[in-house]
Length: 215
Image 1 (cartoon, rainbow, N blue to C red):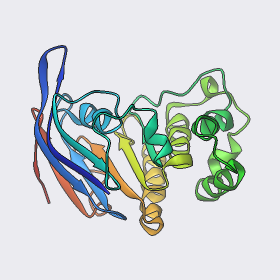
Image 2: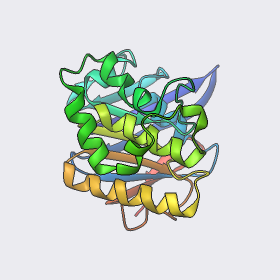
Image 3: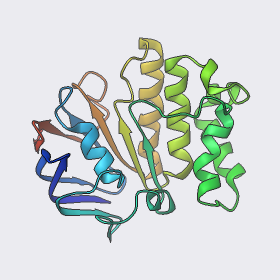
């Protein structure tokens, strides 16, 4: 579902990613392991089209998206949960979740929202609360729910467990594990194997912008 070939990305002239090759099959769950500053976020942002590669190729579902505008990813059923959540503070949790559905003019968002709530009932309980009133862990749950609204084929999760209390971490792991039954291609970045061990099918290790096969 995701196939990255010889990807090179520079930020303000500084090389960040170097000849990255990575594959996430349809229905597969893959980890991306690396320390802070190793290039995990840069790679996920590049896949999402938020950063333009110097060269290389990004294919999703057989479509070359290397030069495609980032906002088009949602139209191709790619969901993204950024490390810093990026919720709109003044909007309610439900409104934040529905933003990608509105942007893509999803024909019947209530059906998808009902499925998301069935997967994460605690998020439905937060629906009417403004994002700025939520804890960091609750915001992570809402950000995951938002990604799931359009992420019917591909889901990119950037450090979903970072800064989250152990109880909520376990809940996030439970939800992500459930996605294995949905046939979604999932790429999860994490600083170590603490939470993804036993969840992912395989892992890649990223160090100084270079990716190698993990376990």
